[in-house]
Amino acid sequence: MERPLAECAKGEHFHIVTPLLESWALSRVVGMPVFLKYENVQPTGSFKIRGIGHFCQEVAKKGCRHLVCSSGGNAGIAAAYAARKLGIPATIVLPEGTSPQVVWDEASLRAQELAKKDGWVNIHPFDHPLIWEGHGSLVRELKAVLGTPPGALVLAVGGGGLLAGVSAGLAEVGWQHVPIIAMETQGAHSFNAAIKAGRLVTLPDITSVAKCLGARTVAAQALACTKEFKVFSEVVEDFEAVSAVQQFLDDERTLVEPACGAALAAIYSGLLGRLQAEGRLHPSPASVVVIVCGGNNIDSGELQALKAQLGQG
Figure 1 (cartoon, one colour):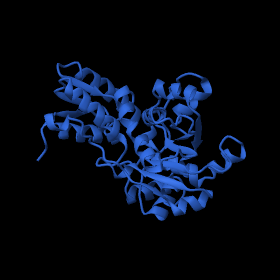
Figure 2 (tube, rainbow, N blue to C red):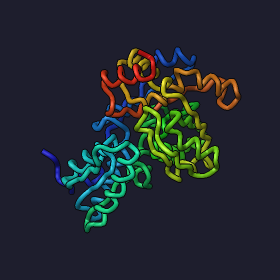
Figure 3 (spheres, rainbow, N blue to C red):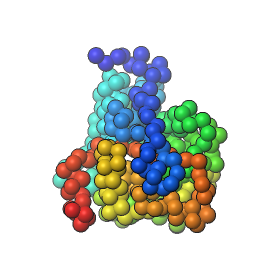
């Protein structure tokens, strides 16, 4: 039985405090302690419920009567979950029979149109201050467990909502000096492209298999974070991300999306060692935290299909 809005809106979050566990296997790979923040065990399967859950609760307090979201992926699942918790109807908008990019553009426009109705509110999958605020809760949990700041924090970047939220969280707990290693896959690298151009860049198409990183343009706030925080933007190939998914499954018995594999590839591909060798990362960081962002668009069959597609059989 779902509890009524009045009770849910009193401050009880829809996300859970997720485990932070040291990985013996990944620590051996890089020769330093690696801690994994298991966001894949959130009730919606990814970190998205932190920000989107917070957003939905806040707009519900202000009288929202219907939620709209143009994502059928992790953001849409988080929106639907939050709506059910709040007892508010939700419309998840996705057209059929079109390319992924057309799906996003058309669905986004349709969601904006629907949100013009009285009492209807559009949920952007990643670009809103309330969403970043919600994601910042992750860093408070890190501090509560670690006590002292890690030597680096590794995360995947799609639209940049997680990066913006984690950055805000680091500032809130006084850890703004912690380097952030922001990982993308080639073909979904709108953040890296923006950094190189010094302005927001719209990719012509998403060609990476990591579709959940598939924002053709990142949030402006993500680019702004690079001015205030030490952010290393790194891009890996699809085969490295998918290989990391397989290795992580073997090492930790946990299956995640290729989008999450992009972050894990920072460990498995030797990237951390390269950053140390280049003097960009401390030669002996106390520890590294990897945000295991999770994701629902994966199962054993999908992983095998991706490996076959990339010639990894």
